[in-house]
Length: 448
Image (cartoon, rainbow, N blue to C red; front, side, top):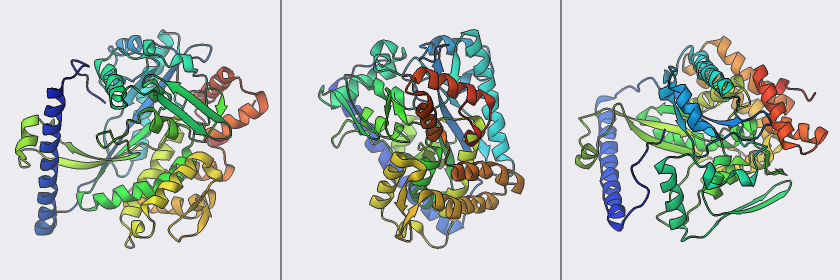
């Protein structure tokens, strides 16, 4: 979760101070990596057991299926629940973020993650009922209109005001232009960063073994194309049929600042995290003996939803496949150029399970066949390596298998609904929410 700040306006001295701190931190990181590498070589330190967790971004809707700007009141009601510390306000007043506890990647971890998800969801459902609203986890809310994305709907936090001001400053006041070519074309101009509120995700965290952190990071990039295809859940925006996972171009264009000094938004983020909070002075002094740190991977490819069990199945696919690929004897990233992996990702986001991509063999392979014949067995192997039970592996990856065979992920179901009933986006949102409440995995959803 992002931390609140005290003010949103900055002077030149603030930016100079920031750059000095950034330089000091980068120097500390370089020193820490060198020391860790030396320790690995000298002591043959065995890797610790990886830890996992998730972040979930959720939409609030009213009884008509429209966004409900109630997140501040929602969070206040959560103060009386055990999950209050695990929730925070998102950019828009109709979004909240939930953060899971951390679990070791072993034995019953998928069941643990599902129970944690249910615990968070149940507490939030109760609060939503008190406020006469509903919760929806979906990549992009179909009923969202452009007039919902205004600054009056921004959450009342200083850091969001600062984000808006600094993105526009970096763009020298130039408006943010959304231009997405899909089944239809969407062009839109906005004078603020509220477009970012369109995209809601199910973000997975994985603590990586230091000695193989580069391998894990590269594996996550390679696997992003099949994972975004099978989990796609964002086919519509502002009433337009666009990509299967429209959240991808929306987010990239919504926070685009350009220039060398601009923020870099990666769909797979490598992070260094302290075991306890790291103060500024220790970064500057590069005192790596003072605290213990680990390298973590944040995988942002997967959209929110459609159901809890679908989400845990997506997590099983990622954790299993990335673990197996990162530990393969033959190094996959030496068989696939980064530029091709990037192209694969955008093809998969656009076309979903109907896409073809260029795989390690250099051949063009339909993604459905790749997932069934290669990615799922890879994930099974990775989960087995991590000590998970055969029963759990079969159950959660079986959901991915059936979703792939049927071709019905969240995006496909939404398109089927619109094909039958037309572009009534509020009706689509309510029908989606009703199916979500059933708890059935999306491949079993019907169009009534």
